[in-house]
Image 1 (cartoon, rainbow, N blue to C red):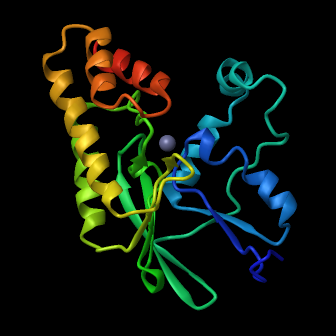
Image 2: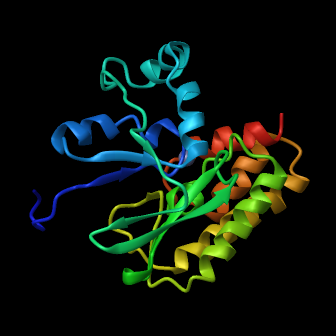
Length: 218
Ligand SMILES: [Zn+2]
């Protein structure tokens, strides 16, 4: 039970990135009745993220001694929707945004989109895995999310005190568009990094921009 007097029923994983599911087992420990649900593509992608080599080579180095044990994957695959206390929730397939097969949720009764990593607010977007085609799809995804005319949009990464304002769909589009424009002409990763940083000096996690710039210009 929570302060809202509801029981947590589902934990939905929007995509396969470790920062979006490594903690799911801890939430489940606190709410043992909850079921971790995912799309088929997310279920299929999770094992590759949980390999001992990836845990030791990447995540244990970033967070020594702090990874939950065990890290759990999904309990159940859902297709394109599920229901929560008689309220329908639609799974939106976003395609490749910050990684493959990402999804968002649409809750019509609240006019709410839970965007996953399709949408960022106040944080440099993680583009390390992207191609230009992926980033163009990422822009299209945010345009598609706008067609729902949501009242609230929860970003996958945000400054906690920032509002869940639908305008973040536009600001995500603007960020990726600017990144693509600079990437087209920049002659080095450092130049691209500096140009985007100059345009977004207050955004958090410049390390993400650094790795994105180096992935795009080698
Ligand atoms: Zn992600």
